Amino acid sequence: MLLDRIQKPNDIKNIEESDYDALAEEIREFLVNKISKSGGHLGSNLGAVELTMALHLITELPRDKIIWDVGHQSYTHKLLTGRRDGFDGLRKYGGMSGFPKRAESDCDAFDTGHSSTSVSAGLGLVKARDLQGEDYAVFAVIGDGALTGGMAYEALNNAARLKTNYVIILNDNAMSIAENVGGVSKYLRKIRTMEPYRNFKTDLEDHLLKLPKVGERVVDTLKRYKSGFKQLVVPGMFFEDMGLTYLGPVDGHDVKAMRQMFTEARKIDKCVIVHVITKKGKGYLPAERHPARFHGAEPFDIQTGLPLVNRVKSNYTDVFSTVMTKLGARNEKVVAITAAMPDGTGLKRFSNMYPDRFFDVGIAEQHAVTFAAGLAAGGLRPIVAVYSSFLQRAYDQILHDVCIQNLPVVFCIDRAGLVGSDGETHQGIFDLSYLSSIPNMSILAPKNKWELSDMMKFAVAFEGPIAIRYPRGEAYDGLKDNRAPIEYGKSELICLGEDIVLFALGSMVKTAELVKERLTPLGIHCTIVNARFAKPFDTEMLAQLQTGHRLLVTMEENVRIGGFGEQVREYIDENGIDLEVVNIALPDDYVEHGNVELLKRETGIDADSIAARLRCYPGIRHEKQA
Image 1 (cartoon, rainbow, N blue to C red):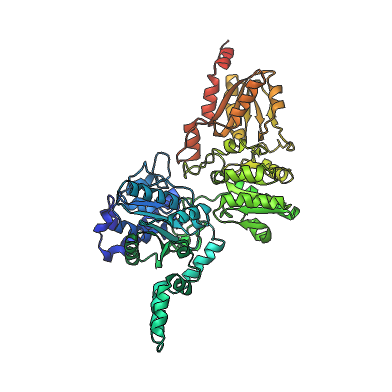
Image 2 (image 1 turned 90 degrees about the vertical axis):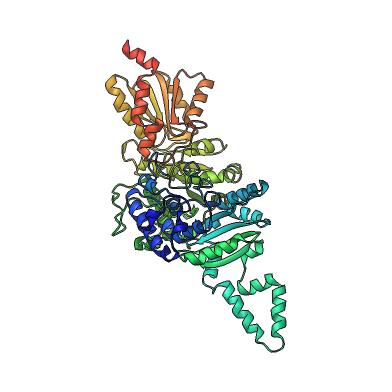
C-alpha cells in the first residue's frame, strides 16, 4: 500500500506523481473504514483529500504553517503527518483529537474547532513571521460556509493591506453543515458556473485583436485598466475589489493543478485567495448523497451508510423540534432562527412548515442574536436555536442588544453540558456562567422531556430575555408524574427526606435520583429539589430547607466558577441561612474529548463519585457513626 510509505511529515513527496490518484483512493478507503467504527467528521474530510495532498507536496512541515478553519477536514492532514495509528483512538478519551491540536503535533499550527477563525489566526502568524525575520509559508484553509461568518471578513479586510505573502485557500464545496445561504453562496455559485477566468481573458483578448484598426488600441486600454477589465470578465470580483489577489477556480480533486496553483500563489507578495472547488463526501456514495448526515457521523455500516445503532428513544433536539412546530401553529408571531444548523438544532421541520417564519443566517451567531433582537423589537417572538458552545460567540450581542432592552428573545440552547467526542471547543459547560452574569436574563433547565415542552411554552409567553439549556442525547423520560406548572423563579420538590438536600439543575436531577439510591441503604436520606431556574433560583425554597437538613448539595453540568452552585452558596452565606453547602460542578478547566459518561466520572459529577463524596462528608459521617 502507498499509505505504508507515509510514516512521518513530508513522506508524501516520495510518492510518484503517477500514484497520486491511487493514494487518494487509499486515503478515502482508510477514512471510511476507520470512521465507520469510531464515528467522526467524514464528508468534509473525503472532500479535502486531494487538496490536502497538494498542500503537503508544496510545503515543508512543520516549518511551513497550515491552519484548518474549524478543523473538520483535517483527518488527511493527520494521516500525512504520521498519525495513522492514532485513528484507532480517534475522538476517544486520551486518544487523538478530531481537530487540529498543537499539543498533538508540531504540524498542527493552530488549535481550531469553531468556524471563521483561520484567516485571523493565519494573519497573526504572517505578522509574527515577518517581524521576526523568518521565511516560512502560511496557508489558511477555509470553507465557503465559514465565509458566512463576519469574523472572516474582518480578517480579510486586514489581510488586504499585506505586502508580503499569505495564501488563503477557499475550499468551496457549496456546503457548510447544511446548505449554504445568502449572498456569499450566490456569488461563489456564479463563479463556479463561469468558464475559468484566465481562459476567458485570453479568448477575449484574441477576439479584440482581430478587430481592424482599433483592436490593439482596445486591448492596451483594457490592460491599463486592469480592475475594470476584471469586472468585465468576472462580475463583482468581490475579493479583488477588497484588495486581495484572486486565483481560480481550480479543480479541488486535481492534485497537479492545485500544486501548480499553490506554488504560483506562494510567489505573490500579497494576500492571495485560491478558490478550490471540491465535492463534499467524494468517493463514498452515501456521503455524497447525504452530506449533512455524514458531517458528524455516528458509527455506520459501510455498505449502506446507515447508523449501526438505530435510535429508538427521542432526544432533546427531537422534543424541541416537535414543540416548535406546535408553537408555530398556535402563534403566528413565533419565528425561528438558526446559524447554519437547521438539522442539528431541530428546526428543519419548522422550516418546512413555516418557511416565511424561519431564518437561517449562516455561520453568524452574532448577527443571529441582534437580528432576533430586531424581530422582538418589531413585535415578534423570536426563538434562537443554537449550540451552547456556539452561543458564547455572541455574548456581547446578548448583553448589549437583547438584555439591556429587555427584549423577549428565547434562547434554546442545545448541547448544554458535556457533549463528548468533539472535545474542548464543543463542550457546553460555560453557558450558565456567562449568561448568569447578564442582568435581565432568566435561565431554565428541564429535568426531562416533558419539562422541556412546558418550559418552551412558558418562555414564549415570557416578557423578557430567557434561555433554556438542555443536553445532547436521549431525553430523560423519568419523573413523568412530577409535572408541577412552571412558575417564574420557582423550583419543584421531587421527594422529601432528611440529612441532605440535593438541589439539582436540569440533567443533574436524574443524577440526583441515582445518588439518593446509593445513599439510602447507608442510612443517609436525601431530599431532591428540581431547581428548574438557574436564574433567578428559588430563595424561598432554600429558606424552608434549612429546617431538618444540615447539608445542601448543588448539582450542575457547568463549570463551578460563576455557575449555579456558586451563586447559591453566595446567597446562603450573605443571608445567614443555616445550611452547609457542597457544590457539585465541573472543574475550572477545559474538558477533552471522550464518551460523556466516562467524562462525568473523570470530572467527578457522576452518581458514584458524588455519593462517595457525600457519604464521607464529616458532619454526615459523624452523625451516622454515632
